[in-house]
Length: 95
Image (cartoon, rainbow, N blue to C red; front, side, top):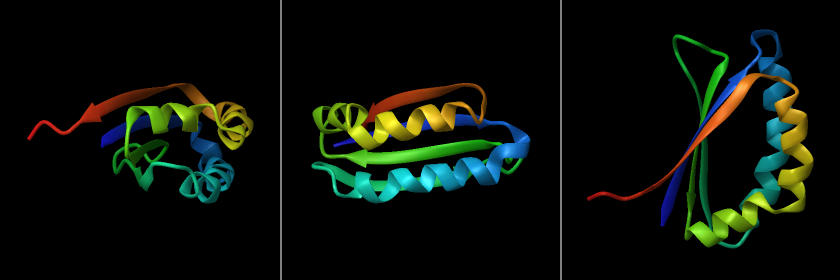
């Protein structure tokens, strides 16, 4: 299993619009092979910083997600609402 941690830096006046666009990613992703869980958090000090935690059965499943039709349709819409490039960490359990 892998855990991904994405930091998404949204324009302050576009948070609600960004979240609406992001919602379009959730249902099709939940149907993908290897999907386990999505969690989306908002930073308390910077509400325009969203943290997305995803769990996948394998790195291969996550890589396939990155190539999916819905991912490649929705992400460009999300990028237009971001103030800077996001960050992605792919993690494996340490203990």
